Amino acid sequence: MTNSNGNALLAGIYSGLNNTYSYLAAQYPNQVTLENINKARSDNKTAGVINQSFASYLQTNFTNIDKDKDGIISAEEMSNLTNRMSTQGLTREELTQMYASGASGLSTSTMENILEHFDEMDTNHDGKITSEEISAYSLNQAKLQKEDEYNNRRATDMSVFYGNEDSSSDSYSILSYKYKNNNNN
Image 1 (spheres, one colour):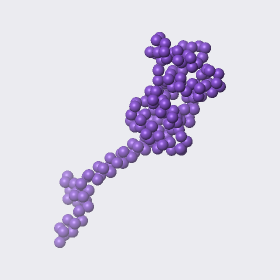
Image 2 (cartoon, helix red, strand yellow):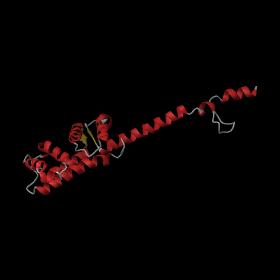
Image 3 (tube, one colour):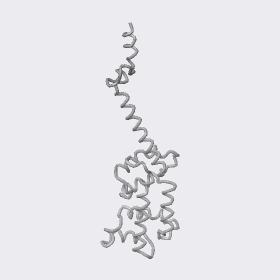
Image 4 (cartoon, helix red, strand yellow):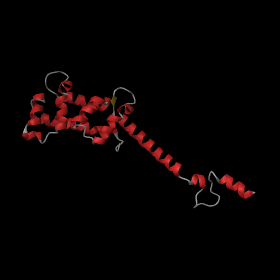
């Protein structure tokens, strides 16, 4: 993953959801209803301004977000959603849905990498990944990559076997013992 900061990776999701909700709430002072979301997505005046991907997510998940089932997504319900996502993490289903709707705010390759390695990232096996788990996974992967680079460089460094031409005759190589013993005879 190009960015090892899980907070930065998921901040786009939280921000996008909040910004889309705020825009809808400003456009429809009578609250954000499913009808208003549909209207905003199809109205020529607002359709070009609203983030269609995040609006689609709100539309698709309206019944899950509207906890009190009054037909309105309140500011409190929206805040609860984003707070839950940021503290408890996102499920594979939520990430897949956001990816499919384009509502993740992340590049395709980053999102595919997160989904592909979801189980490895979910270190506490609660079915959700948090910013911290993404960061830890990214750091571990970067560490493993550096170790591989170092090990590959060591394996191809023939000076370990034959000595370094630039160094003095006292340089050590694995074959030094053989030559030193032959020179002493």
